[in-house]
Amino acid sequence: MILNERCHIKDISNHYNELDELYRKFWGNHLHHGLWSSRKLSKEEASHKLALYVLHKLGPIQNKNLIDVGCGYGTSARLACQKGAKEVIGYTVSQNQYKYAIDNKQKMNTTIHLQDWLNNDLRSSSLDGGYSIECFSHIKDKDLYFKEIARVLKPGSKFVMCSWLSCEQPSNSAQKLLLLPICKEGRLPSLYSQSEITSCMQKHGLVLEEFTDLSHLVWRTWWESLKSVGLGLFDKSTRNYFINKKNKEKTFVFSIIRILVAYKIGSFKYGLFVLKRAE
View 1 (cartoon, rainbow, N blue to C red):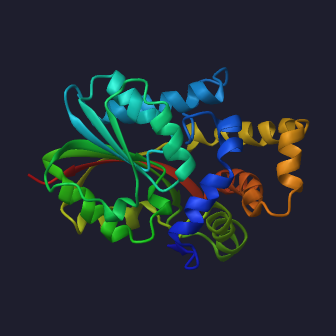
View 2 (view 1 turned 180 degrees about the vertical axis):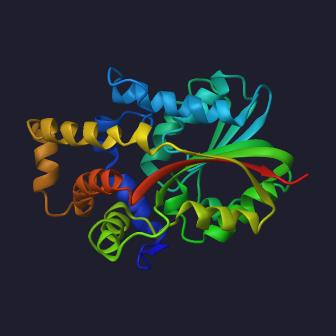
View 3 (view 1 turned 60 degrees about the horizontal axis):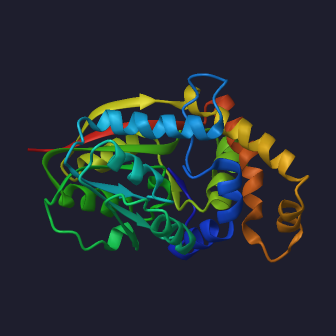
């Protein structure tokens, strides 16, 4: 486990609020990795492909009520509704993401909350399933994260989670030079390994049905992001952002290189977990 104890929910909110415009410019409205089954894909196409893959792993979603933990701009929630979900309830701690999600509902039956998932007020055993794409590492109390998922899901229902991971036993140099700086620059309170996540979820009655290491299919996201940042420096508004000393979150650009290196040496990974609440 890699710990960044000074990270709080306000830091995460500020991170996404400040970088809102740049994230959408460089990554699009799916604010997560892409699934690069082909180099010919654009970032938007690859990100869309990952969201579709998550919904596929969730199984039939027609007429189901789902939860989207860390919903970002609500893009995956709208996609789930397009695929037949009855309702998707999303949670984000970013004011800018919340506003964008509300303004772009497109008549989809999505309910977006500007609220910490750990403090949700959903009824117990009220949802047919759910998913979370790259939110887990931003969660400070990971036990409570899984406890709340197990509480709100109906018995036997599934939850699909994509998460950044550390390898099982990262070297001291990898921790010091790569993983801890990634946590600090990316506003991650902690970074768990696959076994640590599995142990954590099982304590709360969640059964791991499937794990898939997608590292080899998603790492290209950061190479494309690095190229986008480089090209973006020719844009005046992007240059002004990096020049402005008030913008504290610009240090995240260093994590792009760190993540690429960490993927290359195997200390940083990306996993998809398919969970099921016990009957």
